[in-house]
Length: 200
Image (tube, rainbow, N blue to C red; front, side, top):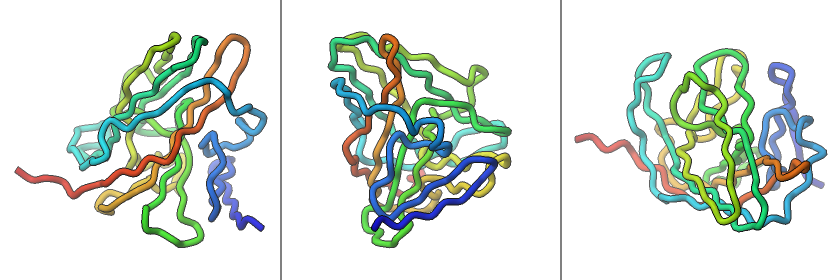
């Protein structure tokens, strides 16, 4: 039997499980529980398998950001649309259609996965970024893996802790619309290496 633990944070059910996490990856599982996994030919590609922190100046001060560059490809014959949000400095998390599940490559502990929303790097004056993929089109994104969340949801840890160098397994989900349908897809496991910050 699958072991599962549920914690309630700011009204959301955060589910952690020893087995594979269930896509789409969001803190609020109730909002996606009736979605269908797509049969469309969509793919996520990590544009680098090696990442290291980069220092950025954000609203809450200077911070080291662990970011993964990805490309999402639409190899289907359908036009698909998703709303993708930047990270935010406070308050309730902005809605976004990207999600991720992350674990350490060598972690065999029971509660090893962290799975919830995935945000674009940087605080934008416009929270939501509508994106359209026409057939055969791809878009590139820079997503943050060590976003600490906000005080509105204080009990959620970053997917990757700053300073926790090593190999990680990442899975990415995307909720999208095509025509009148809302569906999701889930990537294959992506192996990345987070390296210590290089000091000049």
